[in-house]
Length: 251
Image 1 (tube, rainbow, N blue to C red):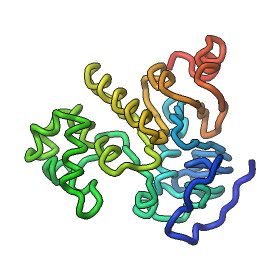
Image 2: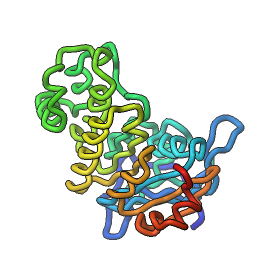
Image 3: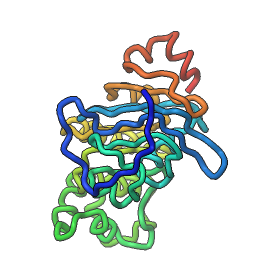
């Protein structure tokens, strides 16, 4: 596939037609300053798919997610949402089109209360529904609604960050290391939540240190090595001994 560098000229993506991916990267290059991190990346996420994005530290996984959500600029190629190139749209416009990014490192406003964080995640006029949805997904948040987010445990902060994927009802969720640094019992809750999102038809693009757990819920897998896609196929094939060792190794 070859990439294009055309700017998006519309503020709304067309509804996905049959066979149209929710997300498609075509020939994407991206990096920081003069340093190129991603090189000629082709990747797609089908409606309702759970896609694992794997690779060693420094392979470019976080850069790829940041490029999709608009925090990092693609220097070449196209980033398509429902078939529309959004590579030149700012991050907030992409969010309005149904894209949700849960970044590594607890993406919450620590000085605001849990309730205020949820209000910021909610669509205008739907604050009560946002609280209800978040507490339904993560009951522990219901007991801390008026507490500053910075006083929550690491696991509770991650729950708060992930609640936006339930509150906004997005079409595509990008998740970057949601389980990093969490206790095993919280990791179980995180993966149970991801499975719930998948079961309701939300498309997911997942980066996580627990490779085998991600592959258990994934419908497709990509492996990045030094900014290039080196594996594009099924989780079942990737889990086979020789292929797994070749692309993932001890990870």
